[in-house]
Amino acid sequence: MEDTIFSKIIRREVPAQIVYEDEHTLAFLDAHPINPGHTLVVPKKAVRNIFDVDPETFSLTLESVRKVAKALQEALSADGINIHINNEAPAGQAVFHLHIHVIPRYVSDGFKHWQGRTYSSGESEKIADKIRQAFA
Ligand code: AMP
Image (cartoon, rainbow, N blue to C red; front, top):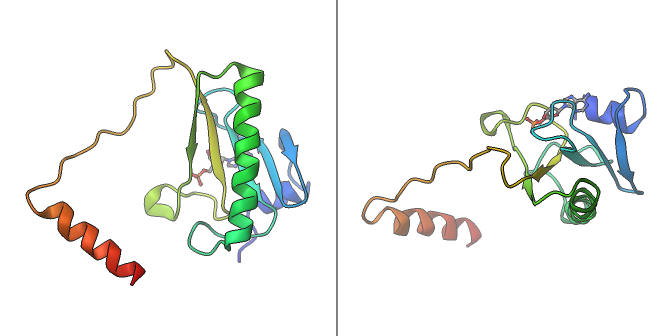
């Protein structure tokens, strides 16, 4: 796997505002926050994204996300938290080391959720069938 800026942060070769660390994960402030306190949680193990991460590494990373979310709620009086992962470039991934965005949200911060669309007649059955087949 390519060396990324996040591996360099983990190795302390690049500075970051680290807010939490344990044996397997690191959490640091996003340099371009959606709201102040926007934190990225990464596994120390170099994995690209959701498609190659092993279940144990993912679980450990999610547990750190849970702790960071609670800390943001307490420390920054967040009214809510968004948890978000971009996987591969078409989905917005710019750094190819798995990272989970933990974003504090406020009642009047002005951000809107993505607009949902509706299924055409029979479309949802076909889509759900395709997905079910992937588990078969
Ligand atoms: P993504 O689009 O999900 O890959 O998000 C990458 C995130 O990494 C962006 O929100 C950037 O602002 C953030 N980022 C990139 N370089 C750094 C850095 N050196 N320190 C902190 N955050 C960074």
